[in-house]
Structure formats: C-alpha cells, structure tokens
Image (cartoon, rainbow, N blue to C red; front, side, top):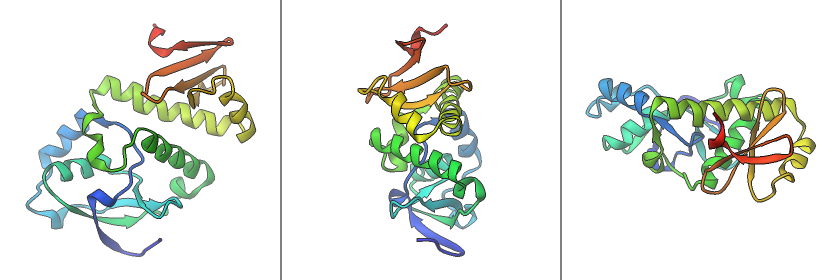
Amino acid sequence: MNFDGIKLIEIDSLGISQIYLSSKKIASVTEWFDASNTADIHPLPVHDFGNNKYTLTDGHTRAYVAYKCGVSSLPVFYDNDDIITNPIGKEMYMMDIEWAKRFELLSIARLENRILNEADYQKLWIERCDRCYNLITKTSIGERAQFQQLSPDLFLYGASEDISVLFFENKYGELFLYEDNVLLPENRLS
C-alpha cells in the first residue's frame, strides 16, 4: 500500500501507534492550529506495517487536534524513513500497534481519555518506549518468550537497560515489574 506524493485520508481510517497523548503538546498545537485553513496542514507520516492500514508514525497530537476541531481528512505521505523500516524500528512500531489494539484504541478519537500531564506522559509513554527498546534490542525472540512465561497472565512490554527488571501490564493497563524472581505492582516503586 505504498504510495508517492501526498494523499488525503479520513482521520477515522488512520491507524495509531501511540497509546497516550500529552496535554502540553495538545495545548501547544491548539495555539497555532487553524481548522478553517486545512490547506496549510503539513502532511503527516503514515506507513502500512502489513495490516493493510495506514498507521501514523508521528503527528498523533496534530491529528487529534484536527479531529477535535472537526476536520475529517488529513494530508499524509508514506513514511519510508530508516527508523520506520529497519528491523528494530519496525518491531517497535508493531509492538505499539499491538498495544493500541489491546486497549481498543483503533482510531485517533479513542485517545480522548488517554491524555496525560507531562510527568505522567513521561512515565507512562516515553519510559514505556525506552523499556520496549531495551527488550527488543537486548533480547532474542526466544528469550522474550521465556520471559513472558514468568507471568503468563500479563503482557511483557519492556525491560531495564541491563535486563535485570522486566515490565509487564495487565489488560487494564496496570503496570508490574518482575525483579529478583518477584512480581510487584510498579506503583510500589519509590
């Protein structure tokens, strides 16, 4: 589903690769966004990760603000950047898409109740991505399968840089860590 140039796509049909939005970023975009002049909207990057859907690889905040302002379609371009197409990047985006599916976040509109203040955004999204990167780059698929068996009722989503701590979540998004053969709710961390 690769394409050249710029294409206009309905916001509701775009896939997402993010499960939280930053209230600070939304406020910033809202300041300059002009829904009456959609011709000036910079195209957003999308990629088909094999699910026959154009998924945003960036620009979730801009897409969300456009949606909230009543814009129904956005200009997009096909993202073939190396960070998207290299094996690690592709695997990370596939994990992001899986997270979105797990939480039934199938469109930008579904992020409405997942807007966080800056501290929570840093902890729940940025740190999550860092943990995912550690898991993907420092372990093999076989190791990840073994780690998943340490807590089969939860979803393995990340690891510390030295792989001494594994991070899990349940279907409600509650976070847990596995360290020294003990599984604990992450909120017990000081």
